[in-house]
Length: 101
Image 1 (tube, rainbow, N blue to C red):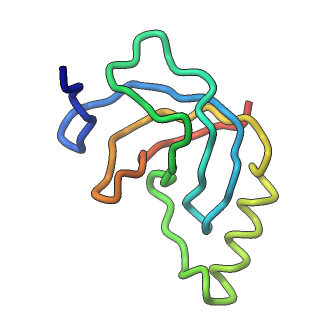
Image 2 (cartoon, rainbow, N blue to C red):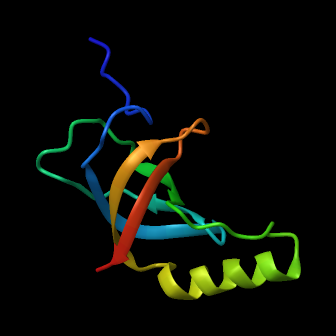
Image 3 (cartoon, one colour):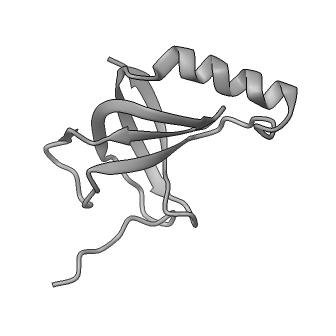
């Protein structure tokens, strides 16, 4: 049985929780999914790439972009976060708001 994948067209209220394992740039990170919401409607992998919703950043190869990556890394790397999933983008990343817990 094929499971339905989340898309931008569907409203999502799912949550995923776990530690941040890698910060890619100022608005993208990878996390290990250790817990999922009780009422999640979609499946999630053990590791997911998260794109922070509504955060625009410079390219990581510019001084500003590198600083944004460092700032996010200092804020969340190795910490446990709760992500509120809005949708999955065309790169299969989860677009989320998040909080450190």
